[in-house]
Length: 343
Image 1 (tube, one colour):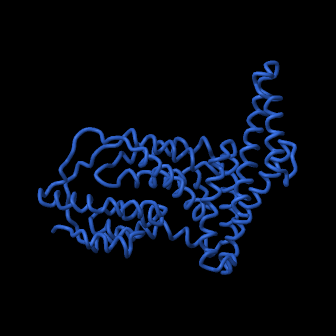
Image 2: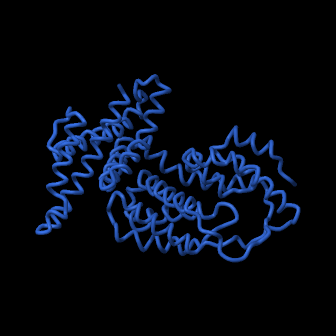
Image 3: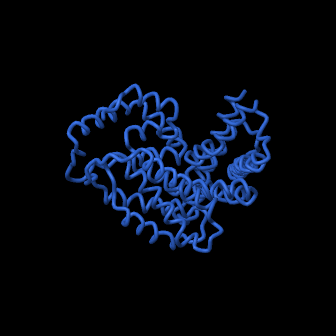
């Protein structure tokens, strides 16, 4: 039975973040991905608005042929899909850390399994897929190298995503129509398996969950401190849920009993920004209220003093200071621009 474009758009508008339009088009993997990632972190749901006509046309074309129109060869590589795999893998790893980190086999079994499944879920969207066993092997082999580290899900997700991309291929099976209730049952089980431990830990063990998330955020921002622009972007993303909540509550903060705990994460990230500003001021030798002209003057003097070309007798020390000076200058100029916009 063919699908109608108006129905697909209606489901997208009503329950797009839940993947209802993908369930309608029998794209269950894609629907599950949107459910578990809050609409593909908002980007996937928005992007689907332009893709729906093509998806409906593709489904109806395949329906008329009664085949999946199997393709041969290797699908073209996609940097967007790769980034989505890495992001989803990290997201699945963080969810596993919140809900299942108390298990003794967490770092050995749970974390690589969660990250690998997240990466493979993105790989299985549409007519393409990948070899699940190869993706999981890469995740399990990478996990022991970063055992016990808060940001271990990042290298695990990178390794699993690279392996998944190397083993990508088109689906080989023909389209088989299944009962809608059976499909919803499978999707529901997968959704509960993901959200159950997460909800239990977040609601009944809130303080410990907040502590772990705060530590993970701190480790991530510290890991990204060598790239100030990327670190600043990540801070904005991490603070976005808090600011959205502030819009709904009139800017009064998180007043619910659970959200009071989660507000600690906001305070932690804000304090991390303050610490970075203090450190940057110390490196450049300026006061926190220094004008941009004074910052530029100190920056130019320090660059001349510690440029590697002027310190060939101590290249390692000079390079280290030079990198610190560059990072400090970028941090302070960015903060000055933010303050100027706020005035």
